[in-house]
Image (cartoon, rainbow, N blue to C red; front, side, top):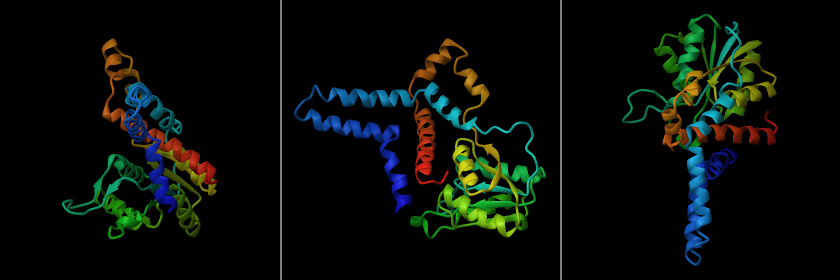
Amino acid sequence: MFLFFSKLLPLFVYPLGLTSILLGLALIIAWKRPYLALFPTGIALLVIVISSNAWVSSLLMQSLEWRNLPQGELPKADAIILLGGSTQVPTPPRKTVEITEAGDRVLYAAHLYQAGKAPLIIATGGRIGWLQNAPPEAHSMKRLLIEIGVPSSVIIEEPDSLNTHQNAVYTKKILEERDIARSLLVTSAVHMPRARLTFKKQGIEVIPAPTDFLVTKMDWQQLQRTPQATLLNCIPQAGRLQQTTRALKEYFGIVVYWLKGWI
């Protein structure tokens, strides 16, 4: 039940959900007092315009993505912990496992293994209850890793976790069973701050290995390169709204995890 509400309730705080609530409120108020309806309508417009702005979305995303940047080359470790959230279930009309925007996680884990950074990959992630007929995401990630050249024998599946906290709790058991002391933690850069703190809370020594960056140094420089670029970046865009929402989701998650004592 907590998992369900943890995914449902934040939807009303994110820009699109908040805007929908405000516009609904405006319709109710407009029934008897049309002029007062201008206030929630104006706030809704302001929320969408600000959250769809390239400057706002890039700043929020950068504040998370650049927090755990590796200083120099990543050191060698005993294992690579690969967090889920990067694959699509192979249900019709899909013929095979497909990757999401966060599919870089699987690719980067394979890259680190092939570069000799660690001898094992722990793929951690299950499936939400309403997808019970689908295989665990750990299995899907293993299939993809094998397809891009990682030997099946070096991939360990953790198929039960449904969130980042459970990723850490269930992975800890595997680490202890195999006497693994230090691991590289692979997840999206925007998710790394919460993931690192969660694993640290479980007493797991991890070295952040972020990937799936949405804001690079070049992207940040281009925001203010020319007056034309500055103007275009102030115009609302759906992609920017998505970035803002994703960053807010992580900040909301950090607060919730802190309140629950998970970080």
